[in-house]
Length: 449
Image (tube, rainbow, N blue to C red; front, side, top):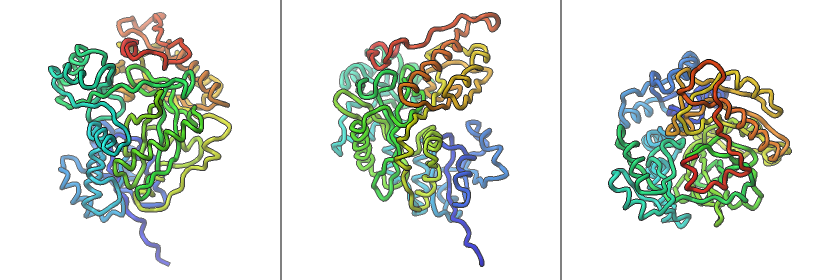
């Protein structure tokens, strides 16, 4: 008996939340994958090289949007998806041209434009957040007068907390704009700062969560709600903890808000990663991301066995999906990832031997670290500046918090001043927050820690 050929799925590939190997693994027995990408792009060439003999690649280097769409059409795809923030708009264009499921062009624009997203959430009555566009340093005082202090400055288009910082004065805003736009003429947004309520998560945890959703025909289904270890200043995430250290009532509030935001932005199909700040006045949207969040697939699969990458592929093909098993999601242990994000520099790593004992800590399952030889700290790089990840689990949130605290203390001995000699005993830089709750730090203190 002849077997029908598997459907063709186009993956518009770039740096993102799933590697080419991971995507091919999830697609096994499900579909034929063709990567639309720039195979010699230095940002991910090393990732693609090992899969060259196992993957089909359509080179889009130098092609405009219309040319990519025509190329995609010739491949007769049954679906299209991306795991990269930078490729959401191009993927939406391909989907529209080929008549495939994905975000509409308008939705993709809102998902990748922080100013437009704030406008739509406000117009839909989901949330009003003070937000203005700013580029010219001479506009600093006027922009801050509209938003108030403290405020948060971030690129209008971007991800990973790159060039994101707290602003407490017009002079500070002007200085950052001069720095950020010196070599790159970009638009920025200035948003009102959302103060957190540390009682919502408890001591030792960040005051926000992320809601991971599967969206089918416009209806979001919650796959998981992730908690977060303390951030590294200015606003750099350091991982995930599952389940989140919140009550069922707080989780339900965050879930309802995330679902309202997904509907307001017109999201019809796919996976979303919505960051929600837990404030004294209830949950508030930080931002909605129209793709799988970074490291989310790993922690969810390790916790429950559920494959979010495979779910994304199935959604793109119009196949049915189920949500993770709640019993496994809220079991008797806590799973976490901790990203080795350096504190504000300038610092350089100490001897690698200082990291040797991390894997021996009870509860640590794996330490994946590989700082490059020319590594140095730069808070402007956001979470991209992480040098590795620690994977582990604990009996409960109290034990997980204690273990993460131990990791932070060990890592504090690893960061050091770049001007110190590379031999001999390094002077240790104390970068550990010794308070029980990092959320108690006032906004005016965050940028100077």
